Amino acid sequence: MDGVELRYGGHAVLQDISLSVEAGEIVTIVGPNGSGKSTLLRVLIGALRPQSGRVLRDAALRIGYVPQKLQIDPTLPMTVRRFLDLPQRVDSSRAAHALETAGAGGLERRQMVDLSGGQFQRVLLARAILSEPNLLVLDEPTQGLDQPGSAAFYRQIEDVRDRLGCAILMVSHELHVVMSASDRVVCLNGHVCCEGTPEVVRAAPAYRELFGTGTGGALALYRHDHDHHHHDHDHAHEGHEC
Image (tube, rainbow, N blue to C red):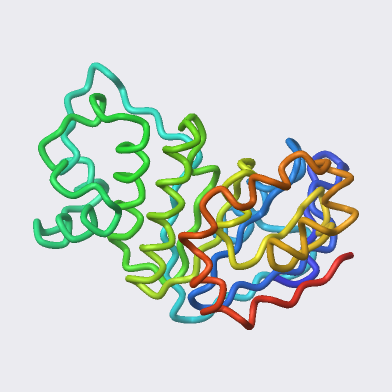
């Protein structure tokens, strides 16, 4: 993505956005409400066309997308297995493997409406995995989950990255866990305010201006379980501030 700009009704939602995601990298976009986070994802996956700039995708790119919300009619009986067959059937071994990879193994016969919030999100993740993506895109994937549930889901995301070798790009507002689950963080407020490793972004004046310093201590929430991931991605330890 290079020099992307997008406007609604004369209002600039995204201004001069340049962003790249490398194979095997977990990149998280953070920013206040209305900062253009979800819009940026929609441009990246091709659902929105920017007025200027360009989005370059590898010819072999396969994107798996986990939406922010998905409403299931509570009066409509639908098992997890049936849900994975939409919009096209998949064989049982592929479905079982996707569920296992997403941490939702054994849920095939459960009704979608009976799943907990965390289970529901893992089934959405499994459905995205079915496309065998080399880029997995997630929009606020833990919205509505409690803090332990969010931390567990982000650990699952890291496991998916390690198993599939795919890049991951996600939007999140949960600074207390997302900062330690990412190789690189992009702080957005209509434009890229700062980006780099969690440590670089957390120290950036632009980030502190938007979010204050209150989330600082929470960066260690479960870092002891994840430091090895950051050592595996030394190339991502450089950052810059705009």
